[in-house]
Image (cartoon, rainbow, N blue to C red; front, side, top):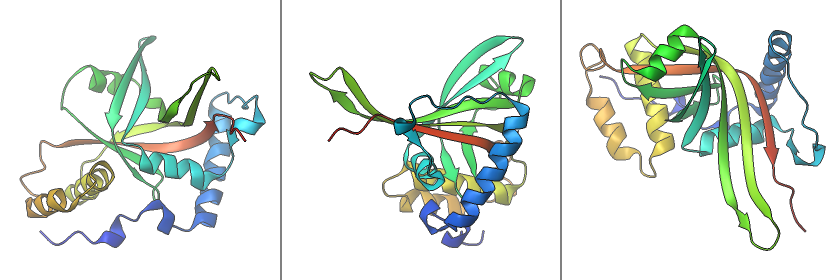
Length: 199
């Protein structure tokens, strides 16, 4: 298998921020026509910068997504990798189970990435940063796309990704990835909120 080039899996900070912001704005307008969006009431807590929201998705190690099947809700937390260039989230899952049944029934999901920045004693205040996203799940079928998705997850989940990346490069894409199921959430809407900063 050929080496996985680092330029194929760029860190969000290396991407064209202006183009990314324009892309997100266009997606947000499209999503607004599909579902009802609510404005953040306390504007001082809103994260308006798209690059900042993307950095939260790229720096956290898990997201929680809300699923729905036959009007019954289900919540699941996933280890993930965020690809800023494609504005999507990758996750790995088993080939069967409750999560997969729900996704097959309804591919639309709402999710959240959260950073817990401690509870402030004597202030009755929790410091946090959260990013909400809305999108659609598909499953990757091409071996090369699976490799890039796995590399994205490895780089985000591991402090030292080199050992796992070395193992990934040794895989035979024609045989070793047949039973690997990888989901992709294409993000159509983003919003962010953080606790009020104290002076």
